[in-house]
Structures are given as structure tokens and as C-alpha cells.
Length: 568
Ligand SMILES: Cc1cc2nc3c(=O)[nH]c(=O)nc-3n(C[C@H](O)[C@H](O)[C@H](O)COP(=O)(O)OP(=O)(O)OC[C@H]3O[C@@H](n4cnc5c(N)ncnc54)[C@H](O)[C@@H]3O)c2cc1C
Image (cartoon, rainbow, N blue to C red; front, side, top):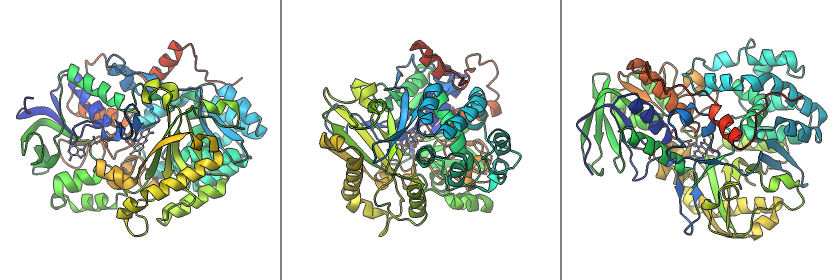
């Protein structure tokens, strides 16, 4: 393997899916780009590993693949590079209750969703219909503005009484006048009548990274999120597992002439004054201690602390940057994983038939009180006991894609929401990993004993395990740091940073920015957009034109499904 050249136009530190997305766009725009990845395989936050027996593909990080929202899907021709998106049913998510009822969320047929909710609560179904008919037609523009453009708003703007809440209040009288003062739990209780619907909607908000115990946008999420789920499902997997997305991006990058150097941890950012000029590799890299220069830009795909405190170094940070960086909260949206192999397809005895093939679910929340219990536990660094599974569970991997488990076997995954700093310190996770996994087993057994009887293997992964595997995922945070109010929009990673630009010349971020990194590739797309604008290479890129959600609609159309933006 030829080593890196002395110089590239652009260097990307970290080959996660967002770093690769930025790299693909910029390489395809005619720049020479090199990506340096610490691990031997790129894409740590979107991995699929055979950590159990051969043939069991374990998706340890991104599982709800939202790549079909992304303009990158078409712009980068990811299908041509081997990406195939699959799902198990139009029922994307469900929330089972111990009395064998379930609240379900349809991924693309809002009328079915409306009818289902009507069977639980007529007023709640009407609320859903009103919001859907208002917001579904504008969802692509909303996502374009919120996930695929540089953030222009901080937390104060989104809590403005003149904002979205006021617009929605005109249609839904149950939204109180002081909407901007409410948190998400209070809003769900004000807007929905049925407690099971309140609970299921709030659980889904937590799953999406929005904490309903926060105000601002988090208060509006219980109203908006069911629409987002119906207008465009997030519940997809990739053929072969989530890591196939990394391979498609890496293939695209190589096809356009980019160089991806794996096994190359970056130790240091080469700074001249307050400008980033290149990187120095670690002594343990495949090319030990190599220094590589960037003619025009360096993009850090590492999160806030590893970038500013690790690569640049605290002593080189101006005081206001140091303050902002130190205030950044890492231990938010921290997940504990149980991954099971079953010798039978998932079956939910006594529940509505549809949920047997639905893609994902949350459980362990029988009422809003359990959501409040979770909020209290996380706030106080207490382990929820019994666990609360509001980070997402997936049963649809092998139902959608038979390549993800050996013949006759199926996989199910659950993410419990936990604090990182447990009593006794985070290192205690090694001692309690299996016993906490047992508690999750016991909880799922209460909902589905048959499923647990068919378990033939289990793998547990703690937040400490996540942190060890990917030092950029500080404290195991699945969103690479906080997304709650103080770090919302322009305040992520800190006020005044201007992310994806930074206070340093030539240095950009594709991680710990707004939007937070997900398989929508939004963080990488926004980084690419801003770098291309600054380097003046965006013009004449006729291929850089796909619209948000277009890919998803096209994939559905190929399968004979037309997304409707109105419930009659
Ligand atoms: C438990 C969990 C669940 C998640 N669930 C979902 C989900 O369901 N749906 C979804 O869309 N997203 C989910 N995510 C978020 C997911 O991680 C992101 O979607 C995505 O993978 C993040 O990509 P990234 O490029 O932003 O960051 P990363 O994947 O973290 O990329 C950073 C890269 O930098 C590398 N690196 C670290 N240090 C160095 C160094 N010094 N030098 C060079 N390279 C370095 C790492 O190995 C890594 O490959 C989840 C994350 C976790 C952890």
C-alpha cells in the first residue's frame, strides 16, 4: 500500500460515515482528499461485526438507518456502490404494553396510522390527522432547514412564542398558550388524551435523541415526530448490515480518486498560528509519525473534546473556546445494548398481528410515570431498575434481510437508556455488564416470554465498551455529545463556534455540530456544503442537486408505494 502523499487539498480526520460523506462530496467536486481512520475498518459509529457466531451480523451502532432522507443517497449514487435499503413492514415502530395492547406507528401509510389511533383514542387520531395534513407537505423543507443546512438558530429562537408552537396552536387548541414554557412531557400530556399514546410518542422522541424533559424544540417533538414517522420511515436496515453504508461511501470515495488510510490514528493537528495546516499520525499508525499537509482545509470527524482538547491541545485554545469546549456535555443519550440470536422468528403472542413483522419497538414504559422515572434516573446518574428501553429495539434486521443471520436464526436488539457515570465509576460497567443484561432479559420476558425462550445466544455492550471502541464517542454518547437545549442549533458544540466552521482557519467539523451525526449523513453533508462554499468549488457541480427525502420516495415508488401527504 502506497503511503500518503505529502499534501492534499483536504484532509479528513476520522472515517466515520459523516467524514466519508464530506470527503466524497469534496473529492467529487474536484479536490484531492485523504481520510485518516484510526481503526482498520472505517465507520466506527456504523459498524456491523460478527461478535457472536459466524453469520450473525451484529449492528452495534446505527440501526435505524435514515439514509433515505439524505440528498447524499442520490448525489453520491450510493446504490451504484452497493447500498440497498430494506425494511420488514410498513409498521415501522410499536410500543407494547403488558396488557398485550400496542401503540403502532406506520412508516408510510398515514391513513392506516390514523385508523389505528382512532381505535385507541378518537381525539388523538384527529390531532394526528390535523398535524399530519399541515406538516407532511412541508416535511422535506423542514428537514432541509433543520438537518441538511447549517444551523441558523440557537435555543432562544426555537422557544420563541412566535415560532412553530404558535402556528400549531392555531390548529390545535389543546396546545397551551405558554407552549414555549412547557417541556415535552407536559406538551404530550396537554395534546394527547390517551396515556398509552402519550407514553409511546414520548418514548419515540427519546429514541430520536430528543429529551422530552427539555423545553424548546423538545417540547414540540411529541407533536411533530409522529408525522415524521409516517411521512418517511426511519426504520430501514442495509443489506448485509449497517456497515454496508460505510462500504458504499468508501467505494464512492475511492471511485472518484480519494484515498482512505485505515489503521492511521491521528495524534495531532499541525497548527501555524491559528490555522490548521495538516495532521501528524500516531507512532502506532500503519505509517508511523507521518506528517501530512492540507493545502486548503482539515475536517475533523472527531467529536468536540477529541478535536479541540486532543488534536489541537488545550494550551492552543483561546479562553472563550476553552470555556465552551469544557462546558460541552458528553454523557447524553448513552445506551446499553442487548443483542440476542433467536432460533424462531419474533412472535408476539396475544398482541395485534401487525407487530410480528414491524421493524422496531420501545418497551418498559407502561405510563408517563416511567418516562419521568427515566428522566430522574439519568439526571442523578442512577441505573434505571427495571431498565427502560427507549433507545430503540429492532427485530426487523433478519426479517428484512436474510443475510443478517444464519438460516433459521433471527436477531433482536434492545438499547436501554442509562447514565455513563454509574455508582462506583464508569469502570464498574465491566462488573455489571452481564447482570444488567439479565435485567433487560427479564424485562423483555414480561412482554414476550416466547421470544426469550427462543434465545440461543446473547451479546451485551456497555457504554464503556462503546467508548473503548471509538474514542470519539466520548462516554459512549450515541449522539457524540449533548443535543439538549444548551447545545441546540448554533450552540453546538459551543456558542460562537460557527460550526461546521471553527474559530481556527482552515479547520472544519463534521461531528458534534448541528445536526448531530446520524445515518442521514446530515452532519457530513452540511460540512461538505460549507467547505465547498468557502473553497469556491460548489459552482458547476451539476450532480450536487438531490432534494431531501427524494430518495426515500423513489425507493418506495420502485416497490409500488406512493407516499400520500394528506389524510382524507
Ligand atoms: C449505540 C449507538 C446507536 C446509534 N443508533 C443510531 C441509529 O439507530 N440511527 C442513526 O442514524 N444513528 C445512530 N447512531 C449514531 C451513529 O453513530 C451515527 O449515525 C454515525 O455512525 C456517526 O458517524 P460520524 O461519522 O459522525 O462519527 P463516527 O462514526 O464516530 O466517526 C468517527 C471516526 O473517527 C475514528 N477515529 C477516532 N479517533 C480517531 C483518531 N484519533 N484518528 C483517526 N480516526 C479516529 C473512529 O474510529 C470513527 O470511525 C448511534 C450511535 C451509537 C453509538
